Every structure is written in C-alpha cells, then in structure tokens.
Length: 166
Length: 166
Image 1: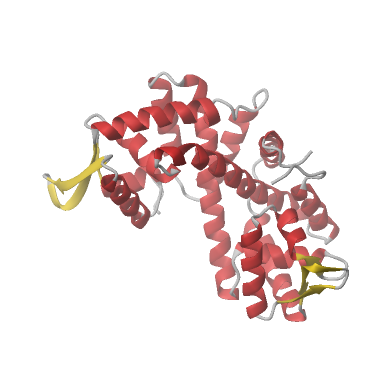
Image 2: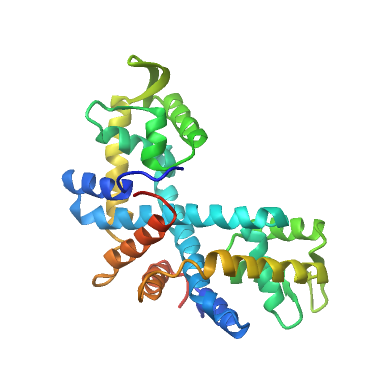
C-alpha cells in the first residue's frame, strides 16, 4: 500500500478525543498501532520465508527445536513455549513433517505424547532462514536510541497484565 | 493459556545472544513481542464483540463510517483509511450489509465506485460496541507512567520506516 499524507491512527486518536473519549484515546492508538505493526512485520517476514516453503509459525517451531539439546520436544511443550494454540502446533508440525523437516514419533517416556524431532534438512533450512530474518528484519527494526528496549518493556508489561507469565 | 514461570520471549532473546546473533536479538524480541501482544489483544477484543455479531475488522468499518459527516464513504476509501486489503474491506462491508448495519449503493458522483452508508441499526450497534471496547480494553491498556505514549511513538517510527505515511 502506498505511503500516505497523514497518520490514520493519529487521525483516529483525534476523533476519539473530539468524541469525548479522551480517557480511552491513547489506549485505542496503542492497540491500533500494535495491530498495524504486526500486520506490516508479518507481511515482510512471510514474504521472505515463502520462497523457502515456510510460514513464520513453522519457522518458529523449527527454530525452537534447533535450540534444544537433542533437537526434539513433545508437541504439547512446543505449543507452551511458543504460546500458540495446540491445534496450530499440530498443524505446523504436520506440514513440517510432510516437507521432511521434522519427524514425529511416540514419546518413549510417555506413550500418550508425541515428540517432534528436527531432521538434518530442517536444521539446514532453519539456519538459512534465521540468517535471512536476522539480516533483513530483526537487525533492521532497531529503533533510534533506547526505543527498542523501551517498547519491548512496555509490551512486556501488557503481556504480564494478561497473565502471559509470572 | 495459563501463566508461566518465565517469559518465553526473554528465553528466546538469550538463546539468540548465546548463538552469536546479539545484533539481532533485541529486534527479534521486539518483533516477537508485537506478535504476541497483537494475539492477546485481538483475542480479548473479538471475545467482547462476538456476542454483538461483530469482528474487530467490521467494528472498524462501522466506527469509521459513524465518524464521517454523512455516514458514508466509498468502499475503496475505507480500505485506505483502515490500511487493509481491498478484498478484506469488500468482505467486511458485505457481511455488514447482510446484518443490516450498512447499505451499499453506486456513487452518484463516480459510477465506477460503490458507497457504503451506515444504517441507524449500525449507528446504534457501533455506539454500544465503542463504549464496550473503550471501557474494557482501550481505557485499561494504559501502561505505567509515560510508557503508553513511548510505545506508540516507537511503533509510529516502525510504521514510518515501512512507508505507512509521510
């Protein structure tokens, strides 16, 4: 979408104040900004991953598995660590298995749970894609001065308020 | 999802640093935090709107129309102002029309474009839902001290970098 003259979120914030909702105007601008930035970032990330056959959700599963000592985790644990819905993890793991990037097997220490293990093809792909995202997105979203850490701290506070961690 | 002991994003940030990607670690934490907070906020908002038959996307269309002088806008203009994909706006407007909340008609001053006009049922519903979101979400996401404005400013910078406005 092309750049535009005025910031639409700032326009909305002024509409909120003019309507008599000043106490909610900053919160509305915060929430709407988060929605918008998420959309921009996800779009950029998925465009980079698409040629490698990954989505961001599937990249995150591979990245997490590659960080573990043995390259494997119970599928339920993956959902907890990535804070995503169990059905989404199951779907991501299934698609990764179809692509030969992980293998699933029954947990030898708990017959009711399923382990996902990253394959060597998975390790190779996630190394390539991590470098790509680090270079093209993560190292570039640095804000000026101390802003990156301030924003992360502010978002941390929102997540704690929502019971995201203790 | 239940609260958990440690912040998974902080764990990921440390994994990034330990892997030798310190220059991208803060950016990764920023991007992942934005994704997570967006998911939490959208879940809360949509749970509040669902009993009223609205999604956040459809609420935003109604809210924008209610703010205009005549309660109507060309559908293409709605997409620009809300910064969403034309197909998404078309879909939202169609669902709102099916629910009797907007009406569509040919633009009298441009036969190729379609106007969406909010109905009185639409005005009544968006007033109720705005109050609900203001009270239950927007007025509550205030961060401590000056953090709300700092985060909005930081996100503003990210949006400007992405060409979101001039």
